[in-house]
Every structure is written in structure tokens, then in C-alpha cells.
Image (cartoon, rainbow, N blue to C red; front, top):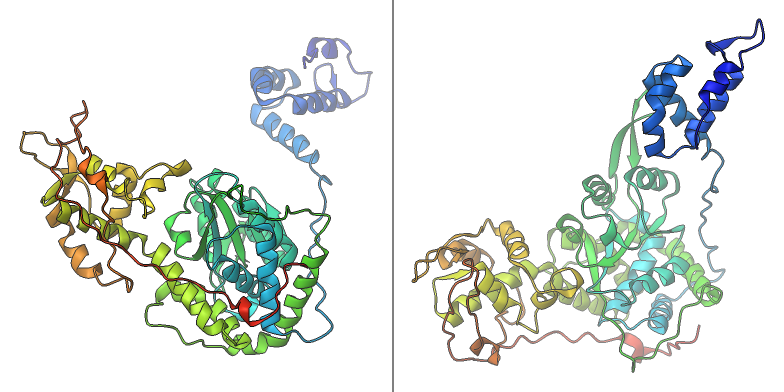
Amino acid sequence: MQLDVKKEWENAAPSGESVTAPGITTEGTERILDELAALDALDYDLVREAKAKEIGIRVTTLDAERKKRQSKEYEGAGHEIELSDPEPWPDPIDGVELLGGLMAAFRRYLVLPDGAAEVLSLWTIHAHAFEAFQHTPRLDIRSPEKQCGKTIILDVLESLTPRSVRTENVTTAVLFRLVDAYKPTLLIDEVDSFLKNNEELRGALNAGHRRGGRVLRCDGDKNELRGFKTFAPVAMAGIGRLPGTLIDRSIPITMKRRRATEEIEFFRWDRTDGLRVLARKAARWAKDNTPKLSKADPDLPEWLLNRGADNWRPLLAIADIIGGEWPTLARRIAKEVIEEDSSHRTQLLFDIKGVFEDQAVDRITSADLCEVLGKMEDRPWPEWGRNGKPITTRALAKQLSAFEIKPRNIRLSEGKVPKGYYLEDFTDAFSRYSGSLSATPLHPQKTGAFSDSLSATGNDDVADRIPPKPAETRQCSGVTVGSPEKGGNWSKEL
């Protein structure tokens, strides 16, 4: 858009009418400012100095006036947020039947890993009663690729949880104002697209894990210091892993793409009446049992410590009050989740220890170590990176930095000095963490893959082949998670 300021100048104001600049009426100036507000940033930048001079104001004043007019475009736009709790079911609710119905609902629309339906069902009830607890665990719904069902989980949760707010992006300011005003259940999709480099938002999500968590801001025209509450249930879905501080405050659910032979019902927003009924029943159960939950102090196994205990205490409290098989089942699932996810770094140590032992060396390059780890089919390392790529030397260094282990120059027999690790670098970590896992010791499961190449490339960073030892089998047995479905008639029809 082009402004004919010369023409405006030529149309001098009538005698006695106020002007802002020679020949420019107040009305004319307003029109020019409105037109400048409609320009895009590039066009405005090209004319701002000339227009400020022609109108007779400073450039900074012109910038402020343009910004003021642009902000008016958003006044009254959008719509007010209206959140409400589901009306509690009129009759008392049996907790075992409620959990059975919730599990059936999730399994109706999703192919889930073992234990996930139970975790989602307990977490849903916790969302209705989160104010009874000192912590609210985040749900970390992750997958190595798209189309694995993460978004569908949020769809189902949106119908089951109170004051649910669904979003694919959120700023820090919106988050803490939303939580402070509405105490919602936040369902955040595609976190991998905007959370990684947003330390401020991560801090707010971390703070909201604990009752009393808040952020401090200078707010209003007078910049008054104010605190905003951040304590609220949050479920996040994305590709790959969350930042480490959020992982510590989360219960993970790792999704995989559904096979063509695995049948589910497609989720439809116009057919959620059954889910709304379950939400009402969860609200009634939470209302009746909140006094008990507020006083609950569930017995924690010795292996459930620190933030892991904070994350699981609300779900175990719910399971204990519901009774039946749930107290035992919830702890079994918690143990498996803790061992499979929270101990990834410890598992990495075990695997690296196994590599040193199997190769009978006292040093190994970063590239060779990643190549070996990337061939362990029963481990997360082959799909550790974004989009399911194997673990990289950089990602390996990041994980090991938690144990104060850093890559350094290592000297090989042929005189090359690539980046890598000496066995002695791990001595302290091996001694401190070798007993951290209660399951079978986690060594690499050996196959013929080790008899293949760990060969050098044309890059000097990669060492020559390290002769492998004969393959041996070291297997890790998992924990089979059962389901209490055998104890009741839990129909998948809602």
C-alpha cells in the first residue's frame, strides 16, 4: 500500500483547523497512521523515517502509534474461555468398575503398550482430584514417529478430564495466566515443535509439578510484582523425548505405530457421550474420596525414590483406596515404567560396561561406541534420536555428562587420536550405579552383529576395527504386566 503524503500536504486544512504538521489535518494524520498500521513489517520499515518526518513526529512516536493501532485489531477478537467441571454422577461409584470402564475406553480407540491403559485411567481420576495431592505428574506421551496414536490419547483425555484445554502451542504467559485463573487440565500436542529451546516455558511446566509452584512477573501498567500459580495436571504429546527436567517430573507412555492387523475404533468427536458419562463418574468418585486422598500416605516400595515417588504417589493413593488388585497392579506397573524409562542412563552404563568387556579393550571411540549401541535391538539406542534415528556421538555425550563423563582425545595403536572414552572414565559411575536396577543386569544382548564391522571410515575421527570377542547371549527378562479385567465384566462398549 502506497501513501500519497504529497497529496495530503497539498490539501491544506481550512483556516482555524488544527494540524499536526504543515498542511496535514488531525483527521489526515489519523488516516495516515491507520494506513501505516496496515503495512507489513518490511514495507513499514522502508517508509517509517520519511513518514515520521513528513507528519512532524519522532520515529519512536510513530512506532508506538502504529503498534497501538495494530493492537486494537485484536480487541474483542477470539472468544472467552469457558471451562467447567463435569456434573458429578448422581450415585456413588465403585472404583474398580470405574477404572475398568476407563481402561476399556482407551483400548477402544488405541493400541497401547503394556500398563499404559492402567496408567491413563489412574491419571484421569487424579486429574479430577489433583488438588488433594502435593504433586501432579506430567504425562509424557511420546513416539519415534508420527501417526502412533499420541493425538488420539489427548482426544480421549479431553473428553474424560475436568476443565480440559487442548492446544498445539502455548506461550509461557498464556500458560501461567490460564492455570492461575482456571486450574485446567492442560493437553499439549506437538511439544517437540516448540518446547526444546523454550527454557522459560519448561521452567513454568516444571514449577507446576508441585503444589505451590508459581512464576513471578511484573504485571500491569505499574509493573507490580505478582505471583501466578502453575499447579495443574498436564499431558504432553510429541515425537522424541522431553527435556531431562520434565522427564523427571513425568510418567512416560511410549507409543508405536499400529499394525494393520490391530483393530481399533476410530475416534469421533460427535460420538463421545460414553466418555462424558465416564467423566461424570470420575468426578463423583473424586468428590466422594477427596478427603481420603488428601490424607493418603501410600506405602512406597524401596525402589521408588525422589521424583519418581512424587510422580507415582497420587496414582498409588488412588489405587489403594479403590482396592482389589489395584494396589499390587499399580506398583508392578510403576516398577516396570521406572526400570524401562527413568533408568535409561543407568541402562546406558550397563550397556557400555558390556561393550568394554565384550571387546576386551580399555578405550573406544565415540563413533564405534555409538555404532555398537545402535545395533542393540532390545534397547532404545537404535531409535534414540529424532525420527527414530540411532543414538549419535553428541547424544551419547549428553547422557554421560550426567555422570560427569566427557569424551576426550584417545590415542589408538596406529597413532590416531579421535574423540572417545577410556574405561577408567567410567570407574566411579560403574561403582555407584551398578546396583541401581533390580531387574536382571542389563548387558547388551549379543548377536552376530558384533562380528560385523566396527571399521574405520575415511574420517580420522573413527578408529580402526576393534576385534570382537566371540558372541555370547545375555538376556534381560522383563516384567509381564497383567490386567484386572478377569475380575469383572468390563465391556468395551460405552
